[in-house]
Amino acid sequence: MGGEMKAISFYSVKGGTGRSLALANVATYMANKGKRVLCIDLDIQAPGLYALFEIPMEAREKARTIVDILLSKDQLPDMRVVDVSEYLNVPQNCLFVIPTFPMSRDELLKFQRQSKDIWASGYFATITDRFLKPLCALKNIEYIFIDSRSGIVEEAMVALTLTGFLAQKTLCLLFTRLDTQSRKATYHALTLFDQYQYDIPTKVVISNIPMGEKEFKLTMGEFRFNSKAYDILIEFDKRLKN
Image (cartoon, rainbow, N blue to C red):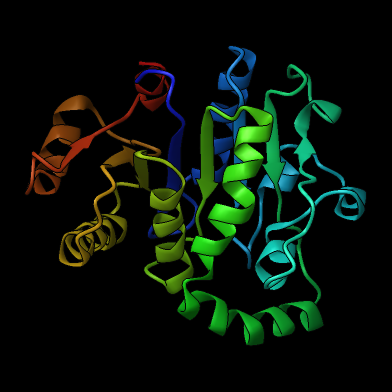
């Protein structure tokens, strides 16, 4: 894929697919290979990356969260992000996180009131140009991993849009289980991606496969409705290296 920065969105329609855990594992793997990775937690109402990377709540006082950035309006904060090497055994200056921490009821209500204007205003373009791209240049970032909120909701679609803003080389990893409910919901999401004409290449990642290869191929047949646009991606960490 060359030396150009890549932006990858980790997304799922249903929760409980291991999406955030996969992001943390792949990010750690890449950092240990010497790649410089920035992770952004956009699952604002149910954040998980701070826990997976063992970032203590005290770090909230010395790092900027995605909520800080979203609510800053025209006064964008300074570029303080979490270097995960402070908490985990990964190389220094290789793995960074813009975290989200659990919010109190009052904080969450305040954010929900103000975020309506944020999602509608296209403010993400400003954040990208004035904060995220300069931050990536400063840290020499090679990969950006975005943990999206689950569901077909506005915040999740914004995460996909942000992925497209950040880099020319993009990818959406769509995680799903193989139970009937998850498969139908994922199929519906892929159909909506076509209708909204998202240009981001999308790969379906199967989580928790409880069956043999023969049954797996039969079950996955319905996903192959557009083989040019989508394919089944299981060992995605190997694919990302190329």
